[in-house]
View 1 (cartoon, chains in turn brown, purple):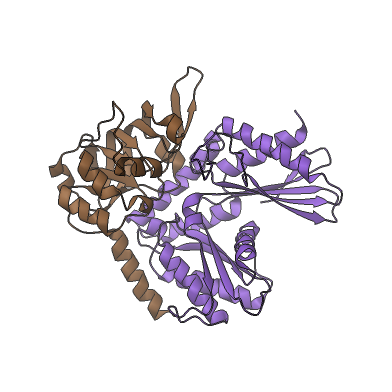
View 2 (view 1 turned 120 degrees about the vertical axis):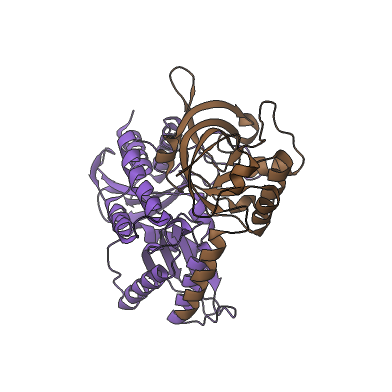
Length: 191
Length: 292
């Protein structure tokens, strides 16, 4: 298990390879469809959000206010990442994002961006909302809650030993592309 | 509050937090079936832990609590409109309690008012029965797996799929190949051969109401289900698409009549976090028996 704490350096990212299991700690920001489209269209980051060396988590958590009025994440697994394929590489480059946590993998544009700028794709276990919520220590803040609604807002989360697997690295390898190619070959043999 | 309201909240809570026994058995078998020290095995271990944790904490198994689909069998004369009103109130309350995410968005304005109520949300399928009591089944279907569903119109030149069961087999396996891990596999397929574009998809989803270990009454379809299940698991897509031995936990297929000009095969994909429960209710709306 490789420990990663945000902010993460390019050197740390370049050392990661497909198949590595990682445990992520520090601040990460959720961001999904609405946020990616907004930023890609030239929208500005809200004050207080710093993505330099950070990680974007493709996640629309279930968040409730507890009795003391504090936000509490009660379910927080990853959402499907491929929807951000048109935007991801550009956003990572523009804001200095070093990693993306999601599920299902991404395509060639993001893979190329990871190689060019030093980034990785980190696959969390889809649907494992309770196990992953246990690794969210605190909600620091929320942005765009009114504009985009709770699942689409930017939640600033403090994570502790959040488990993920590197499935796309900065050296041009994608586990997703490899599995898809291998399974296509087997499929053709079985038709 | 009236018993029906409370019963529906309990059905929603249980569906969101507790995986049905038949699915859990499939997941445990898949866990056993993955090689030690692989990321696929590790994924299945996290999935198993997640199932236990969600039940223990009575919190959503997956944060995407999905489309809320009610299937209601009711006797002649039952007031369906009153049921729907009560169910909408129960959905709103269950959302407040955190059993459902604020998950319903106005498609034109992009607004999410946080209630999970709106046009088409939740969805109701009412069926009349000759039985005296009401049976409610609920499926919460997440967006990730819904997005990898596929509908094919046969013949399909690219896949060399003709209007026969072999053609059906080819397109169903293509759907599995295209889905890879994006639908949160290991998944379950619900398939309808025939129907029109709307009923094909609708009937493919009703296959998720079947028990995972039941046997299709139609011998040809039973054989096709087994064949696709076994072939899919040879593909090596595995849990989450990480590579591995279990790509599917099950395949359920039905057929419906079609018009001569059309031959649709509609494939719905259900993620491993298969949320489906159901209960029989007495005349007052109290739960008398759980189904799954």
